Length: 279
Image (cartoon, rainbow, N blue to C red; front, side, top):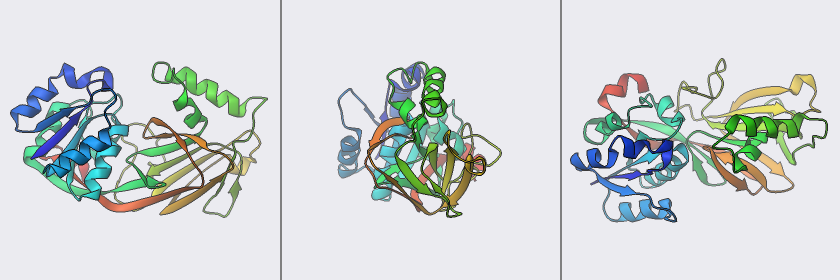
């Protein structure tokens, strides 16, 4: 029995607009629609305990990570159905980001591949975790509605004349210590160096490495203004709890932070028509 979890509010109501629940039901897929106040992790656990042999998520990337973590724990196939706003995870898997109905074919006629999962303090992420001014911006109540403005305001707090160094410490691959980064981005596999972390930015999702990008703050020396490297694990120390964005969802992270890559931990099932893009 395949089970698909659907967030009708994601992507401005994408799932409802394309009739995803009805189309999935016609394929014999059991659908669970998220309701306010319901715990998605608990719903997934209940479905697996009830005999689900494949699980999928139609929603944003934050919800994807919750369902993918449970699938990985039970070694079940996971299906990504892009029904969020930007669908970064789907893009990097090679799934058409604007065709959630087409992605349902993965349940009935899909091929499998194994990819990595990232973890921070034992919590999975499929895309990335951001700290610093981006992490602060995600916490803002206006972030979803006015992302650009909120990001600019948060960046000004870091690089402006009254900027204070964020209370965290990270040592890079060269042994240099960063104590005042404006932003730290830790991704599940590195982004392509010539591309920003948008669109299909990760060429592979099975390298067994995290991607790390550090942007220096106002007081950072020029040679440490920006640095990127890869690692199988990463430790970040901080004096206080840190604001972060885990797969785009606001979160408060308690230090010390331990990031690890879990190589090939997730079985992803992808529709046959998208197989060539996902290889």
